[in-house]
Amino acid sequence: MRIFLVLICSLALASVAPGAEQGKKKEKEQPQKKGAQAGQVAQPSGKAVGKPAGAGKPTGKKMEQTQGGQISAVGKSAEVGKPKGAGKPTGKKMEQTQGGQISAVGKSAEVGKPTEVGKPAGKGKGKPTGAGKPAEVGKATGAGKPVTAGGPGGKKFQAQQFNLPNKVNPAIASTTFQANRRIEGSQNWQGSNYAAFRNYNSEWHDQGWWRQRYNRVGLFGGGWYYWNAGFWFPAWGYDQANSYYPYDGPIYGYNNLPPDQVIANVQTALQQQGYYQGEVDGLLGPLTRAAVADYQRANGLAETAAIDQPTLELLGMA
Image (cartoon, rainbow, N blue to C red; front, side, top):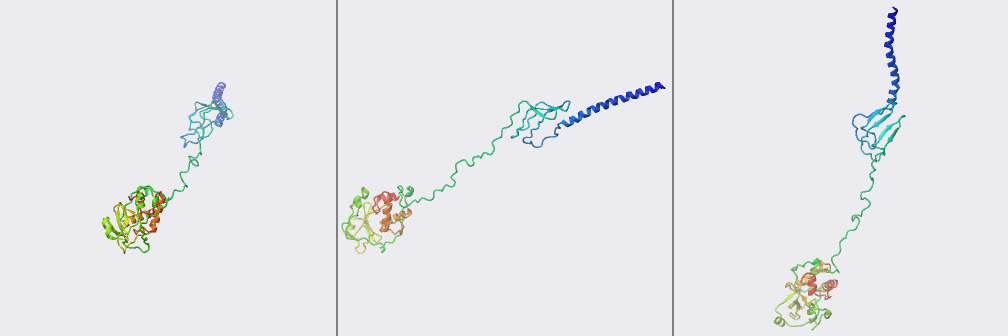
């Protein structure tokens, strides 16, 4: 009986001994696991949503837990975006020492130099693109300024036919006949274009005398004129009752026009350029002669105050 009890006790002790040893092992392992939990770094699960700038968490590492709760990183960490100005080293071998401190081993990768921010793209520098400059507004194209030959801008003046009254204008007085009168100042007008003016002298003859010598004589603007060598001249005495001549002298003819039509075209051309503001009446009165003289003076011509070839050429007529 005693032997049987001894055997039972031995069996009981044998079964209890492994449990006690396992309990001791559990007690020893319990603080180690707690230390590991205290120092363990949990890896985030799943994919990162949006790359945080400057997060600097190493990904793709193989982590090993050593005895005593130390964690060491084996292998290179995957390069997660270059942080903009984060300043945390990437691509390092990281080691966690006892007490939870992390030390960097090896050279830190050069973390992206901050890009130049805030430089104005051409603002404030640069030359103003003409803003604020006053545009050139309307230069006068007219009175008193010389123009090129052939009228304004070199254009040819188109002759017109005017419906002019063939009668005396009481507002414009006729000159008084003076035998052998010369045009004052004509001796100073040099050149063949002014020969007719230098050689002109007033003559009084009856109608027959004029017809015998000139085959073209007509009544224009209340007075009789004859045609000779490219000019119209007053035919003093052709009609004793109608001797009306606002101007006593030659009038240069062009385009086979009569003298009153020549005068009317000149008046129109001078109006367009701002020299003449009177009526287009085909009469070479004082206002028209003054406008002609102004135009001639402004353009460097001899101031004849008459309709001569150089003046018509510059107006774009002849």
